[in-house]
Length: 402
Image (tube, rainbow, N blue to C red; front, side):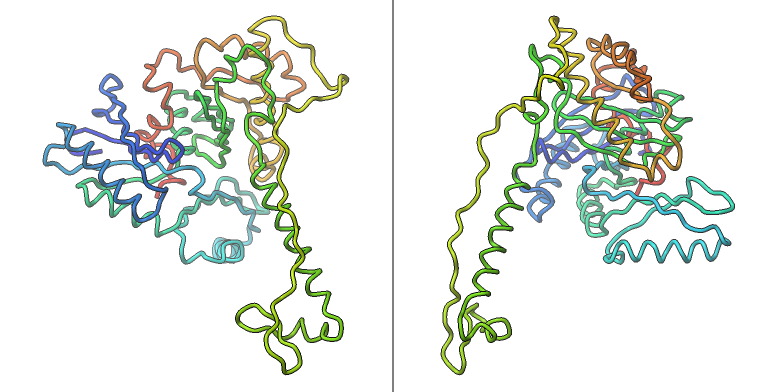
């Protein structure tokens, strides 16, 4: 926090090409203000950092609290720029345990010298110790720190949005701060699922859809929300190219034995003492995927079509439920630390009727969905939980603070 009591959280929002600013005086929630500055560059290239500094300067110049003064700030980066993981290390003695931990870290991160590492022990018994780790590239830290310093702002903390979101929830709800749970933060067009243990974020998953699907008058087909078409096409075309290369190398008649072992720098193949001969290729059509259409399940797999808007909203919310349950099921390294007790949901109050409907299936889901309990807070807090959490990052997020 700055000497004058004025605190600022700066969040980099690549999806929206925006830098968000969230400021307040001390712990007074009534002073919190939210602002954004757009940028046009690609994300995290050299031009981006120039644009980043421009946004910082514009904000400082338009805010009287910065007039000629330096200030400490907290910077939030996208979840994708931070790596989190955990290791179970045999609990022999402290020295040997740390040595084994370092070996495990080096074997999993070959570029370890390029990374800043934070670690903490979250579980320990006579048999083993569980280390949770968060890592970020040193180069990213240095460039962001330098950009802030160039604008008379000093990045006291750099963390990722998922961690800050968990810090905000823990600061506003003591149950979140004291237990192991899942936080489902649903914004209009994006959401995040966060795994917390006593206020510390151990894992996060981003979803590219939000509460706007709950307003739809019809059922939403999940495969229409997002897909992996680009990745699927890349794999298909890579396989086709590999097949073409393999068929080319298999041809060649008398010179087939020479083709594998001798090639020139231009990519042509050499024959016995002769000039370079261009490599023969077999034309392969580029694969394209058909135009996307909603997936139709067989009737025996279909649920009854609801006849009310509330029913439609609930059925669409079940997409969030599916990803939460899958997130829990797929992360046994986290559940081994402790099973989450509840799923706390932050979404607009108008959709509160959905949670009792979800919990009718609590026995099948094996976990209960609860409201985060921050309805009394101002919209600027409820709608930007990760930014509010940035103001509290020094209280709960030490593992993920760089």
